[in-house]
Image 1 (cartoon, helix red, strand yellow):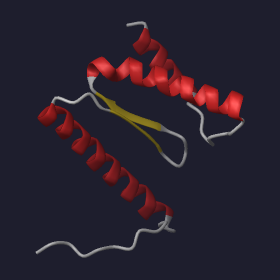
Image 2 (cartoon, rainbow, N blue to C red):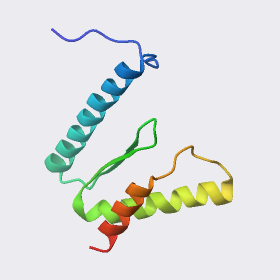
Image 3 (spheres, rainbow, N blue to C red):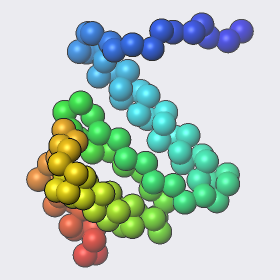
Length: 103
């Protein structure tokens, strides 16, 4: 027996919303990993929480390329198109990215 359909709308309760985000993010990353293993695909997944925290999954050879492309797209949109995407990488995320790039 399958699960019932749910109405897709914003969850008003902060705790429930965070729990749902965490569970669905984990499921999305799991499915991404399965697809990359089963189909030998190179996949990059970037997810931002409502607080702007970065979560990412990439197949190893694609990791730096994905993040590099993302940073240039963000830079271009913000500086040349004038659209603020509403999030920024935290100093901790920037430190982690720079350490990864030079390792």
